[in-house]
Length: 495
Image 1: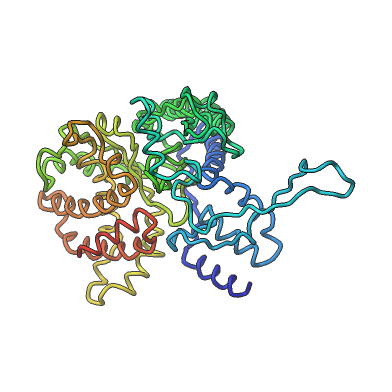
Image 2: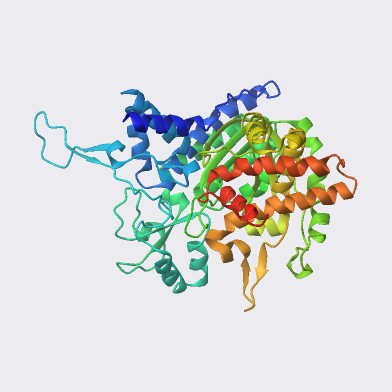
């Protein structure tokens, strides 16, 4: 136990805790009241994500939390579990840091006839040492071949549902607590061994109804028309499973409260990168910093036209990317392990093709990462004569370009057969890592392009490379099981 405690202490020490205190003085009384409901909805979203990661994850979480004050070792287990939101360590290529002996005990009080003094049958929630590739989006015994064979026999629309962002795949005889009968979750006719599709609105029905109710209350309180509209449409999306309108209103958000809430990223789906996990980012808009970044969003069309690749792969309808800067107040859901400093959404190719994407920068998280992680890494890894080039401005500017460059380059494509598809659907589980590597390298190219146009100072031409390299050493720590870490490894192998 002492050895395990020391290992957990070392693992926890790799993270730098910070305290978030964004300024709330810009909020009206109505928006402050709305913020309370939004934060409560975000807690519900967190619960959904725990369920998406692994089928016994919530039970393990509750057990570890209940037992966290039993000993210092139990406290360490709970602390590191809280960081990773699962029994697998994000910074150690998802290696398990708990064993079945550490896991949840569940009482089955109805397993026998009532007997005086008898509490019931106890069992532990054993978990696999290897993190399930399909998370809890697919049956645990399903492999890729079975899925492809089943999918190939479906009509076109049902194939789209099966590979869609907002569905899970089930078996009719699944014994999981959240399993639904095929008649409730799908119109498909199923044989006993068939798979079937269940929309998120049914799979997570109780949680999404609760979150939708809270967002509706927040919408009623808010004084911002834009925020009211987003909260209303997002609540409707939770219940209908149609996120198109709510993603459009998210892109158009113009409010002192900045909120991103819903299913977005597909990193957790290690089988196909089809399924989106729930997340929430709640912050306060930084209008000054936002206005300083308008340059980048307005240059996307020019960047697309000048990409160093054949014109056949370039998009004709790239839109200026709205960029919002906020100071993070609270996040939940798919925010495990190392914290993100920016994101570029939505991932729905329909919206990307029609309207492009929108970017959100987390300024206070970026500043904390640079001060507490990037600078110490640079001191250890960068040559002495180049350390002065490691600076927050080029580091942050590349992050902006990285996120912008998610929105350019090939998205919708036509295959040699003439079939229309997307890069994401064709690359499957390889897409996330390749997309992160692409955004990094194209981001450097874009910085050079903007410097040569005179839109950025020439002083960035050297500091951006050294600062980027320091950031590379930060990202590679994420390991080969994480998209950014794997994307970084791809870049190192080509240096």
